[in-house]
Image (cartoon, rainbow, N blue to C red; front, side, top):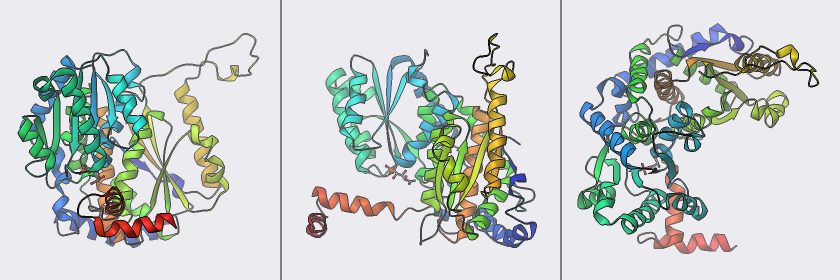
Length: 446
Ligand code: PA5
């Protein structure tokens, strides 16, 4: 299988009888998920998406991506949360975090609308100057403030620089099939639109047009990505944790959480995994963190963070467990050379590849951290390619849904995200929020 769970480093932390004890919970979660009787079951489109996706829409995504590759130097992708992280994560992992700096026949891609920072937006506008720009605005609700503001600014920029008609051909809108401000605007202006299915929530949407259009524009193989996810959909159906690594992962998380491990650190030895970890953090954080419950999702890139977080992991409060995503074949390698004088004392490594040294760093670290009392789950991934990544994405999505049901929360809503929005709207004077404004301002002045 493209992703396999290695439980050998859990020996001192989880016993077989504990797995047996949570198996009934896993059965129940599996049943709720597949019979569509659990909380949030109206958002289960992602469960069958890899095999049942809209093939016509998929072809339109590919055609649009080809046009954008031909007529665009800078592709600005506007979105936040689930309408942003998946696309960026896949592009950085498959292509590179340095994608924009590389020689390539695909456009540079910048992500906007995921903050309200004027400097961040100004920088992207500056990078657009004198270049052929296209925009993909992504918002399921069509009303999220951060992307809405960025879109207003970039739409105005495009209309001013290339004219109204050309701007219309360069704006791609990914939103709800029929509802929302963005959909109305797209219909009025004649922008090409792509659909976020009703039954797929933001953080589960990377394998819809939300992720697929930017990912295809970057030159990634979206057929292989969907193929890997489809394999996961077919493979991860067995309710027995001994036969399903995805469910075993959910069961292990549940057991460790009950034992006081309230923080999960997702670790990779590949810097290109950084944004995948951000995507994973949103997936699990928004899905589980409710009703005063849930594992806090954190992440680290090793060796980098061994030199910042390593001390805490080894000797700090025992609230952590680690989940390491280990990529076997990173598809590029470098050998350490021989220095006749060996002043740096590294000749004992000459002839060894960096991937070998990286593997030894993992082995040394996993032993040290388990010695330090930190449970380690290892997920082995054969290669850093689209097929394996598609599998891993589905693996995490399904593990997250099962984990949420095991915890007794709705893994598909995010009521808490609204609190800051209400306050922000009130403080900005948005019509309809007048009554809350005075109270909030008084608290700020105190
Ligand atoms: O997972 C989610 O639903 C959220 O993170 C949303 O994706 C995020 O809030 C953006 O929402 P929208 O796509 O409606 O702009």
